Length: 217
Ligand code: B16
Ligand code: MG
Image 1 (cartoon, protein in one colour):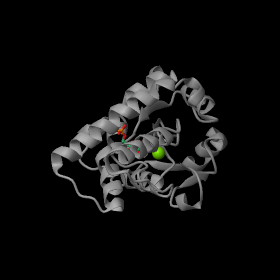
Image 2: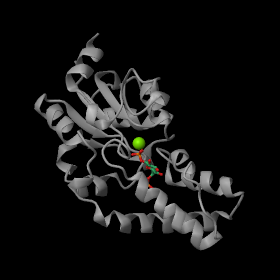
Image 3: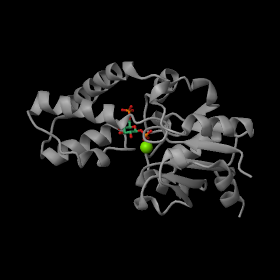
């Protein structure tokens, strides 16, 4: 039986991607008078703030000096945090509150394994801060997803081996990261996530008994 559950944040606990991408769009409009296509959103999911900015600037064929790069990343983050003001527990994705409650009742420890440096603020606003026993610090891990580091750090925060944990993800790179960490990957999303050990179509479908059965077999 698994003893820990390592959660991605954006796309699993709440849909913060909408706020991230809106902040990037506004920034790019303001400084480069450019528009970003919807398809680009997927490429910025689960990757760090700096890597997201790299993806966006590459798309626009723009290169900027490093001071400007840092300033742009900082301004985006300030706008993003301001936009997060509207976050309440109502923004928790369907099924997640119940799933977390079931895990707690079963004595499973919870950790956050998000690329976001804003994880603690977001959990607080969603009313979930107390539910989590550990939050891995993305600033302290050497490599982002698809590298396993953040999931290994999250398991370590719980005092568990990754093999004793499940990891829950909605992104391709995230599932790859869980697999590489040694934790048991549970995906929420479409067929692009079929490299997960177990996949549900959406967060509302997460089923503790099915996960337990699959993990134990
Ligand atoms: P921040 P996740 C990721 O969260 C987002 O998907 C990604 O779009 C964002 O760039 C990244 O966090 C960093 O966020 O700027 O708040 O540090 O999916 O890993 O929970
Ligand atoms: Mg995600």
